[in-house]
Image 1: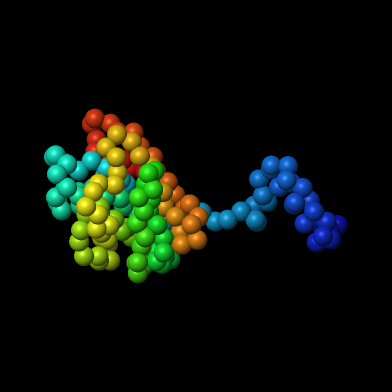
Image 2: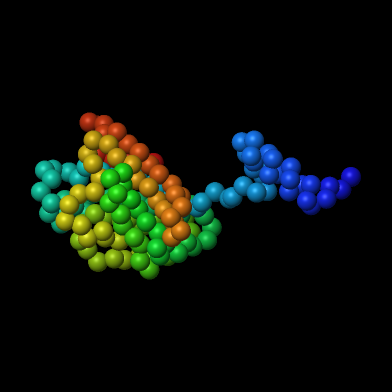
Amino acid sequence: MRVAPAVAALVSAVTLAAGAAPPAAAQTAPRPVRILKIFYDSPGPDLRTKESLNAEYITLLNTGRRAVNLKGWKVRDKSGSTYTFGKVVLRAKKRVTLRTGPGDDGAAVVYWNRKHYVWNNDEDTAYLLDRKGRQIDSCSYRADSRSASVDC
């Protein structure tokens, strides 16, 4: 028996309004870019040197089979510090590392060019947002005295 498109749309709308999950066909595919790691506590005293600032970083991984243009994407912490990607294309199965301090951007490493640390040493959350501001991924941590980083 064939259901008229209007009836199918009405059933779908009622299902969504009732709080049920959308039909499988309407669900979006998983996002291929994710937060892989946050190194939140650079070694040694926090002296805000170039080396110390750049020992603090976040790494993203493209798990997909296609390159993703990150231009306009953002990385943000819980307090609102935000980095916006410029012309960065993350190739399939590749990583890009965002370091906190100063430096010259390349294909695999970009620099926030901050003079202060971003990631709190006790706890924080990293958010990855696409160019439309949609949250693609997040990673939260609470510091562990045995580690200065978290695998997300």
